[in-house]
Amino acid sequence: MEQANIGWFETEQLTIFQQAIAKDPNYALAYSGLADSYYALARNSGVLAPKEAGAKARQAAEKALELDSSLSEAHASMGPRAVGL
Image (tube, rainbow, N blue to C red; front, side, top):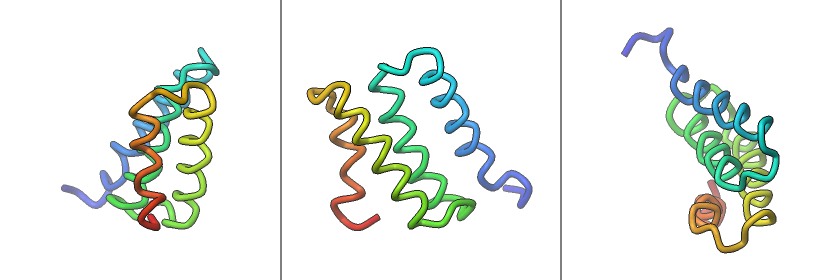
C-alpha cells in the first residue's frame, strides 16, 4: 500500500455515511456505520487520534441507539467503547 493511500478508504467511508445521514437524519444504520468508520480511521490509518475518534464514534453510536434501540449494529458499534477504544 502506498503511503498516500493510507486512510483513503476510511475517509471515503466517513463521507458516504455522512451523505446518507444528510439525506435521512433518522437513518440509524448510517450512524452506526459512521461510528465504525471513526474507529477504523484511528485504528487502521492513524489519520485521526484515538481519543478524538473514540469521542466521535461514541456520539454516532449513541445517536444510532437513540433512533433505533433494537438495531444490533448500533449495539455492536458501542462495543469498542466498552474496552476503552
